[in-house]
Image (cartoon, rainbow, N blue to C red):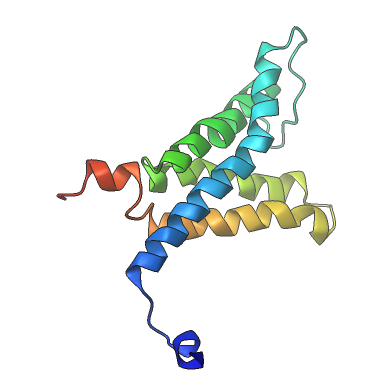
Length: 139
C-alpha cells in the first residue's frame, strides 16, 4: 500500500478527475469575487473601481469582470480553458504585484494561489472531462 503512494508515475484517469475538480472549484471560487463586480455595472451609481494600470476605472472593471466572470464560466465548463486562463493570469499578476504591492504577503497570498492554479490549468489544459474534450476528441 505504501508503495502506491511512493510511485512517481501517475494514473491518467486520476489526473483527468483532478483537473475536473480543480477547474470547477477554482471557477466557482473566482465567481464569488467576480459576480459582485458584475453587479456594479447594474448599479445606479457611477463606477468606482481601482485603476492600478491607468486605463480608467470603467475599463479596469470591464476587464476584471470579463476575466473573473466570463473566463471563469469558460473554465467551469472546460471550454477554451487554456485561452480563458490567460486573462485570469494577468488579473492575478496585477492583483498581487500592483494592487497589493505594498501589502504583506498574507494580502497577496490569495491572488498568488489563484495564479498558481491558473498556470497549472494553462500547462495541463482542461482534461478529458470538459467541453474541449467533447468538441475536439478526434483532433
